[in-house]
Amino acid sequence: MDGFIIGTIIKAMLVLAIISALAGFGTYIERKVLAFMQRRLGPTHVGPFGILQIAADGIKLFTKEDFIPQNANNLIFMWHQLLQQATAIYCSFCCASSSRS
Image (cartoon, rainbow, N blue to C red; front, side, top):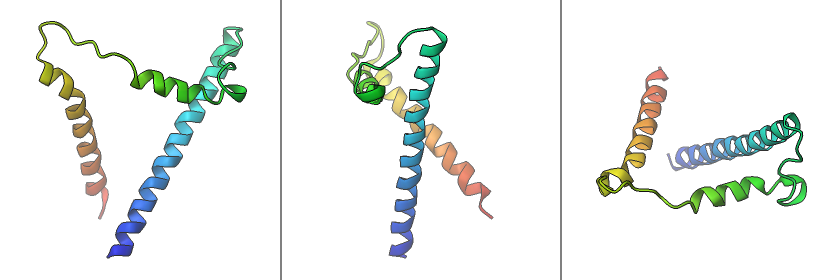
């Protein structure tokens, strides 16, 4: 039973790593294609060949300041994203578990 759990965790981490790598590569290619279409140089100033642009985008995303409207309920406003993601993950697990026969 322990081997099954460890194997499942390793497989999940491998899938996550592959999807993350594909997302990063897709972002890199998208930026290069758009730069070519707009006749500009693209993200070549961040690291060799613009490879570190993905990390720079991630850092920028996580350091952005949250804007909370003045009359908003802070608790609901801050937790709605977590609830939304939890619902999406729960739905995906339901679909995956119902497809098993």
